[in-house]
Image 1 (spheres, rainbow, N blue to C red):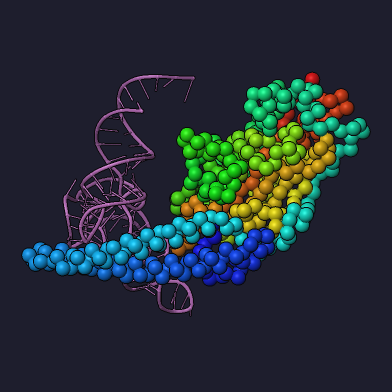
Image 2: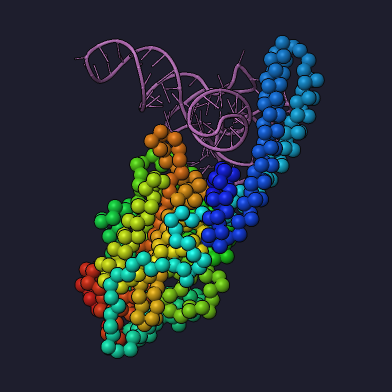
Length: 423
RNA sequence: GGAGAGGUGGCUGAGUGGUUUAAAGCAGCGGUUUGCUAAACCGCCGUAGUGUGUAAAGCGCUACCGGGGGUUCGAAUCCCCCCCUCUCCGCCA
């Protein structure tokens, strides 16, 4: 959520920021006008409350001395009715204003690459060289079904399209990868592990920015009004919701969770296999930092996600997203993409974002600055990394002519010594 | 799920309709005294909104005692609904 004071004081800057990401900035005029009206009403109501407080106190004193105060009481009663009516108006304006503000996306950072859509993103760097196969590359679907480790048919029968079913070597590999990534972040990158709830309430979902905008993409448990998390970002960032953090910053948290996304509107679009599914596992990294350091922290966060891919010896590239392609809550963002020789495409496995104070303001996450004054923290998060596409890359990059898969050396200790998946 | 007890500032804890701007203590910050520490003493010490300042500071006002609503001239205090915590019972992986 944007600071109303920022909108009030620097409307040009805010409108330019919205235009840069392709959002119609006309709402800003409405917000500023409503803010002016709200403050007019507010001043009126508050001066009347001041009067009421003064007179009520006077009534109390005069009654103690046995005086008749019915005249003043009637006066204050009328005053009270005027206040009620003003308060009601203010409440409506504030609720409308709040809803408007929740719908306004974050302003891109000044140094975020300008551009209108994904085609304007820039490849910041690439790492590793895609392997040259001397046989026709198979997709992970072909490999997985032949090896009996991916079963889309049964998954569809037990649940429906777009849900994964891993078996034997694939199930074991995915579990090993989770363990490997968590260990890396905990022991070498300084993170503390959380194992959070997988369902959260509406406030948490709003705090990180999924609601109200992305409501149709979420699974909702109606009876209890709880939401299945679309990413660990939600519970982990909300760890400090409505708190003033007393521990020293920065704070690094990591968590493995399953993620649930309805992917409404994406049906039928490249949905075969593990590339886009309704349920997937992910290891997530979340940072709470002081505003001055958040862009350095974004670089190190991205490097930590890259570390996962480098240790697994998988070729990848880093995309710097342009203003037209960054997500709703982000001010700047890098995507990590793995090369998949079977798919013949780059697969996004991580998105590392700096949200500045956008989420902190929605969720009420603050710290005390050097003067002891509460300030909003900056929050960042990045996948470290998403499992299904990582599985795809490992399978397609490690495939042999006989259809078996040679695993990255780094994961072998986590596989109880197994270095290859065979039929 | 049932019954009971609770929810007041960073913490402890008073306050059952009106000089309460929420007592007091602890912790914290600043100061006096002191060779240093401790003690003692003095002062400061919540959050948000809004007004006035170029701004910072300051000053004023409003709101906030788990959340929401109600009664009243006036609510931490009385009434209703909800949430959460604790204890016991039931159920249960």
